[in-house]
Length: 179
Ligand code: SF4
Image 1 (cartoon, rainbow, N blue to C red):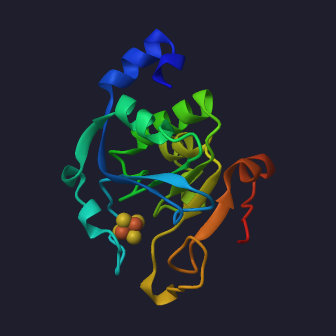
Image 2: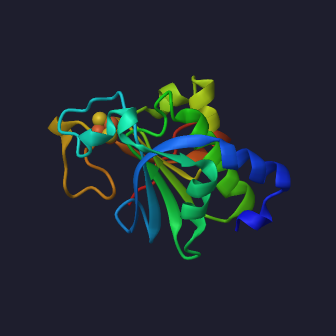
């Protein structure tokens, strides 16, 4: 897959780095089989967080963008989910923008992003909006233990929404996906 990229882009992604906790091929993080990417770093500190070891950005391992792109594309049948930690944490937001851009430019992967930020704040924040704007689905909001609901698809609490990013941008209002 890397050889499809222009020499300039190949050079760029060899040097840019990101901190990753882990990756997992699974069907838990949105529809279908997906390569799930867990970034390290999160300052949402949700009570009852399922993944506290990701809060500290330094807990992750340094990966090049090239390695991350290869991980996301190594199985042709798998789409991509980006989680954390929080991929929109200030130290991750640029890398998320780069990864989403690369995947949309060079593959037909469906991309789902999980974040503790909410849509209303993301669209007011240039860096966060740039990071999500080419992805397909946003699952937004902090995990709220008081609103925990095990029957929900792909979310932990009922405040979290499944948002169709492209449709929401087009219509300039939140378009939720009902699953
Ligand atoms: S956003 Fe996710 S990783 Fe961060 S504290 Fe909340 S549940 Fe944990």
